[in-house]
Amino acid sequence: LRQGGVLFDVVLLVEGRPIQAHRLVLAASCDYFRGMFAGGLREMQQHEITIHGVSHMAMEKILDYIYTSEIELDLESVQEVLIAATLLQLESVTGFCCDFLFSWLDESNILEVHHLADVYGLQQLKARVHSYILGNIQTLSQADVYRQLPEDDVFRALSSDELEVASENEVYEAALHFHYSPEQVDTDQVHLQVSPKDNLRMLDAVRFCLIEKHVLQRLHSRLKPCPLKDSVSAALQYHEQELWQPILQTALTQPRSTFHCILGFGGMFSSSSLTDNRHLFQVFHPSWREWRTLSAAHAPRMSNQGIAVLNNFVYLIGGDKNNSGFRAENRCWRYDPRHNRWCPIQPLQHQHADHCVCVVGGHIYAIGGRDYRNELDSVERYDPHTNLWEFVSPLKREVYAHAGAVADGKVYITCGRRGMAYLRETCCFDPAAGQWTECAEGPVERAWHGMAAVNGRVYVIGGSNDERGYRRDVLKVACFDLANNSWSLISPLPSGHGEPGVAVLDGCIYVLGGRSHDKGNRMKYVHVYNSDSDEWESETEFKERVSGLAACVALVPPAVIAQARSWEQRTKATWEDADLDNSEDSSED
Image (cartoon, rainbow, N blue to C red; front, side):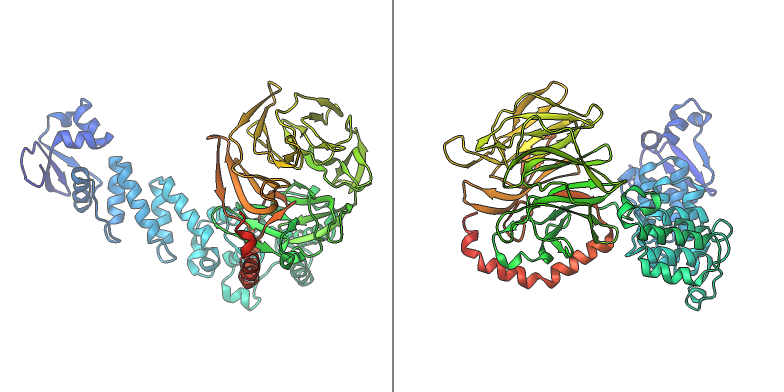
């Protein structure tokens, strides 16, 4: 209609220039015109209506959009169109303008874009500017415009877990660059003796505990007594108290990351070429479509280790020391993703293999198992405040090759073996009462399986039994309803997983590798269960067949992820050689 120039019934006067239009089309386009032409206002009776606060060019473009659902934007027009769209309450055009501005956002226009977002209350554009600062802090902090940004906005970015930096050293430098030019910082023309709360506020956002110890020591030696030196001293004390770090966590010790990854430790591999320490620490995120490897120095190769995560520290508890036959272990280690560092902790009081480990109430519980001489009913509890294990309420009967999970503040363990018998038992431990109670038995006997808790339900997955006279895979997956103390069967596994790693990421259960007794081999496949749809899907396989993997989910900093990537590249040839060596074996998958 507009292009044909027919049936016009209203004229908009914009900057004194007429634009013909149709009342019905305008009223259907947005609340502004709907109120004007259908809200009982005097404009309903007027043939010519003056529009204030909008440029003629912007109104032409907006009318083109109203009639065609298309709009052309460029750097010269976008600001005027954005102002007009905001006034006329055309949210779709406002969104297009914000997207366009963000696509061109850089150091040369960030102040102008930020001003627009602030003046017109454009929360979407404000969020985009904040995202730009987070993703470009290293280069942006070198520019003069950085020191002209609002202090509160920069402080919010420097305090964010989403700040994209390779290390906390970069945050420290960015904090200094807000107060001093890069040239002043490079030539050491900075004055750090004043309080950060005076005119060096940005330093309050630095998580000094995440800076490496030798860097802190060098900075500490340069400082005279001042609040900044106190912060550095506190961070050095944190590094000195390595054993107690899990109980010293604050907002300033949390990793700068929102990247939760699956970590896999130890296990038994089908190929001996990949069983040295360097290949026992594997990292995965679904967006990568590949498993990556990290060095696991200071943690020996073991399998079926108990695993726990407490305050984003990973604990490996006992397990099978099986590089020269099977031997139960009592040694324990702790991994810190913040610094990609291991340290030993107090050993268990007794060796535990084929046990399970759970975290509840800030304590770690090692439950049952065997020491290859006796089957165990003992339960040990680790207190991170004392770095000590103590025996607590034992199981009612010994059990090994069982699995455990925590739900509703209680520990649930299922199935396992006693002697040569496969079990269906379910037991619950209430830390508050300090007692074990029996629950409804599961629908299937099994052992060497996995468990996971999702959305208030406990899932029992994989394992094996001998219900047909010889050892076979258990494909049935059982779900325990805590409220009703009842079991139900859900979608079965696509393939066997005995001694699997199990981890929960983004509400989905990952079942990692393991042994298939039906196929007579360790496996490298990975299956993922979605509890919302009750469906299994295949995920990226391991590079090597593995069973007895200890798996968990932890928050991993970008610096550690970068090391995993570079290690994968360095070892690519080794993986390919191993694949060639096992090509005949792989045909059995």
